[in-house]
Length: 236
Picture 1 (tube, rainbow, N blue to C red):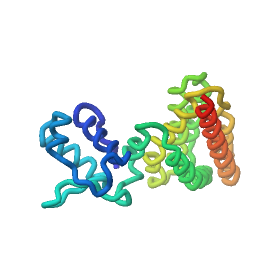
Picture 2 (picture 1 turned 90 degrees about the vertical axis):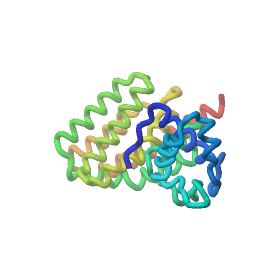
Picture 3 (picture 1 turned 120 degrees about the vertical axis):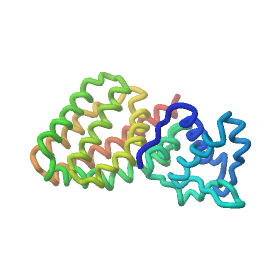
Picture 4 (picture 1 turned 60 degrees about the horizontal axis):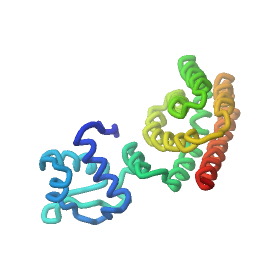
């Protein structure tokens, strides 16, 4: 599902209500006080309903006659939605979610690398090379490093030429960005280029096993980087 436009009062209203629900401030099963929310956010009833439609589309709220609008059980939420992932990180790094993200990546990306080794085109390899170059040129700039890393993993999924795998970008991108902010926001950290280049080299050689192995090693390094970043924050 595409992410909604975050600009303006509409976006602010959606995010504010979503964060309250995801943090448990408004618990599952609770009925929303529409009048109170309308007054608090100083929006029209139509604008508030439009905001709630966004949350309804993501499985977070629902509405019933006589009961009103209420928070659905967490099991009904679309936890694979990019916005829902982003909202969970909005109040700070969610360590449990980061761990779950790594588990998802460990299942998907090594297999994606193996598939890309048989399907990657010259254009795909060029996109990966470009991401590597941007990674090398980041020079300690966290924003540039994050953008380059996201570009690399997006290009890898694209290189599988499997539309469903390509859509996994939405699932992983926000969480991956949060992981990168944690890792690249402090110093020192290891050079990410060699581990990423090993994946590209294996793709260029059409070596499926080497591509899968290189990606597993890259992900193992990612876990170590997060643990180091956690250690730095814990000692501050």
